[in-house]
Length: 389
Image (cartoon, rainbow, N blue to C red; front, side, top):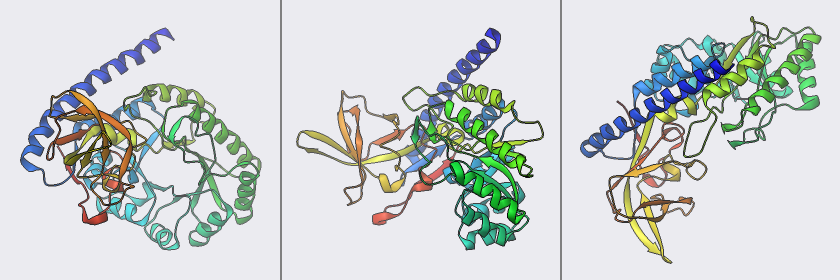
């Protein structure tokens, strides 16, 4: 046991050194890039880190097949890189499936994990050969079954999201007697309810959420087996965190806990997961510029050329690290975006160089997840550009 623990510790140390080196190299590269090419807020991603994160995830959980959450960053180049690394995909819409088809992904390998699917999007998935569909209520089971009687269904459970940055359990997930009712409805329909899934919560810092979820899935498996169903899929969902200025459990720590719980499932049970943020966040810096500065009631304000509507939707909840090219004394800055909407401000303040001024660059570390994918053209501002280096 001590030897295994030492191996994990050594691996984490090696990864930390490699990550620090990569971030340093990335900073130098992107500074040169933006100095000569900047036209609008830009997400700069490093291909070697994308590949390294995919490999690290698979090494930490050898039994688990990762299915990248396309919503996290649907850039075709990213999808192609992960496809090349053996990562499969999880989709939430017609558009995401179209993007996979365009790069040559077999739709049979995609899992449709949006618990509520519009008839139009559902028809497109059925027509293009998607086989696996999540459900968490009888209404959705009936809807998908009518569209595709031979569909393979997996049931989403409501499980603990305690310790996650963004809870994802209030909108979706079957609980208590609903689980039994859905199982019985599947039996009555003769639907192939063949799996179980859950979500630990986005940017989850609590390893126990996966333990609790897997144990709940094991109980659901037993209920399904008792009525003659043949469960053969366990989907561990997403939530795998990245380090953003606060301690997080490593993927190796999560993998060890997950692997121990998976011993309760026969080898023939297929196990997948839906990592998003873990695979892409660390690979990129989100680069923007100072649009202007102001002093209001003694507080210094820093207005960026991007904001809440331009890809920084998570800015208040994720303690991103910011870097600049200035070397002045640090003071407290309140940050805001460029639009005319007062919602476009951030609660968190940052200690940044006092001499920052318009046109200076701001480098947001680990900005590869849920930035460009959540941006809009509100107020006529450009959505971020994306470059892979």
